[in-house]
Image (tube, rainbow, N blue to C red; front, side, top):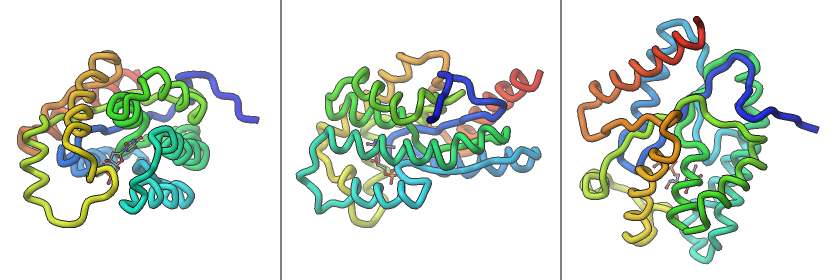
Length: 220
Ligand code: TYD
């Protein structure tokens, strides 16, 4: 049986990046990973949904545009199932080794997309995810935010087919976009709001400054 104490995970550090599609959070994850490695830290980089073979298989089901009939609760549980495997197989072991785990999306995405966007309720989705992760929360979350119009502008510049989530109605995406700000207000001690509309370098500098501060506090 797995027994976890909420919020306690040995000496590692769990950093997550969140943000609307097109906010540049994956690029920021790349830059942060390189910077941490250059400073000599051991980093495990991963993403959700996915991050493990089982998680990637679940990801294919969730994002498959053929499954238009997917119920919101099914969707929430599939994201949580992918996360449970990720936490058990990859995240907890890395944290126990004292490594830095850097995630491109984690449970805040579920609170926003399923809790707010699908209107399942933040508390309900939080409860499902507490079960899935054994109460593991990020040490710090960077919310790389761009507003809905900016997101739309950036999306139009991209090519390619839309996955099932991207293909949702505009009203859903507007709700989700506001959800990023709602969640930031809900967890002011953990979530750092970053203005993603600025240059890549400026955004990176903000993220790096806060990360350094966090590491200094941890190591002091
Ligand atoms: P992905 O291609 O990883 O999106 P992005 O490049 O924007 O990070 O696809 C993941 C999609 O799933 C994205 O639209 C956000 C959504 N999502 C949820 O709805 N709930 C979740 O818990 C997670 C992790 C992602």
